[in-house]
Length: 495
Ligand SMILES: *Cc1c(COP(=O)(O)O)cnc(C)c1O
Image (cartoon, rainbow, N blue to C red; front, top):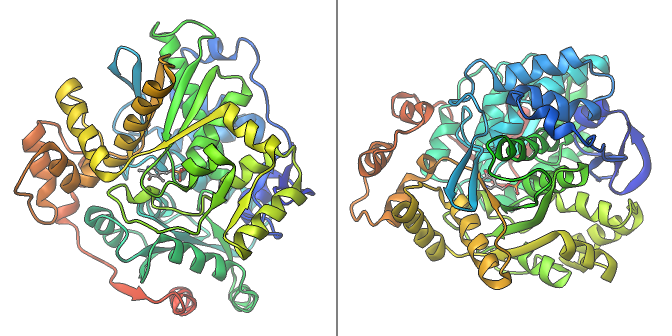
């Protein structure tokens, strides 16, 4: 199976190149030529498998040139060995009679990004070997908070890689920032950028397309690669947990074989919910894919109207990993719904750059509305949802997951569609202690890392060990740059 660029379906590459390169040279995203279909008894076959085994089953068909034992070793390294603090890796918790929470934050950095970023370094280094690549990969990351830490942790001291993370100075939580600034490893770097996430992301994209910089670094033995969710090596591992969650519900007798289940996903870059679409296309009986946004509701408007318009105010919210106006992975969905029409996708993306907006064809719009629903929620509603989940169900949700719980409730009220639903829970509430405590009604919120103990005392819920240990770790990085200064930060990092 080959991978094609979303902007040119004739541009075919093997998976090892798609993963090593990250982005296609025409600026498109590598996407599989076709989606592999699960056999009719595949879900039964996977019922009693571990998460690691399910990962091999789902991922292997997309990894031509990788042996099964190779992929099994990656799955064990990524999800085994107590890397996750529960043995199910991605447990499904019952919240009420027809609502389940798929908890994707039991990994080393307590955010759903670990699901993919524990796997990507293995896929990438194996790809470099298969491509006989001699140079060292310099992974550049723009982060809205969680990707940065998860990528640093995933790539820490991985051979033949260096990793440099840029984050928006005022766009991440105190704990997220501290997690990054205390990162261990000899091949890592972290730098704040003045501005918001889109500034950091645009800056990183510019570094990728800077040919002079690319040549300078090639002479020093480096090439750029990406750990952002545009890399296929990040999307692929995310398909696994949708398959796995459905298997868990089946195994526990919560649903009948073939029964449809809706999925509600707190969305930013559209990577997580895209993986849900792929799982559905592969044959998992998923119903509506409900796209939940915060006040940065560009996707809600897009799915409801067919117009994608980033010319709007940008808000910093209490769910910072969703503070995004340009959802990069939407491009892959446009590619699917246009019937792999690279020219059409290119024209939309050109309009987005030139005018800041585009409108999709009637055909594409109706395909979106067939599979997706969309809604959004502001900070006050998210906080009220955190309080309600705690008082009704003793379920402690972080602000991102709360957005999805709220949007699911809205969706159910508006449509009457009350079939079982999986809410994707994307971060530990302990990454956002101050806002969670505030939502629960605590008036006097502690400073710094003391909020972690405070949330435990307030709720009786234990904090994840890696967050509880933060207060004892030394800060290693303190650099801040303007967007223009990012080139020099890269040169300094690699010198
Ligand atoms: C990244 C992230 C999201 C958004 O996921 P996308 O794949 O970018 O849509 C939501 N919640 C949390 C906590 C995240 O870290």
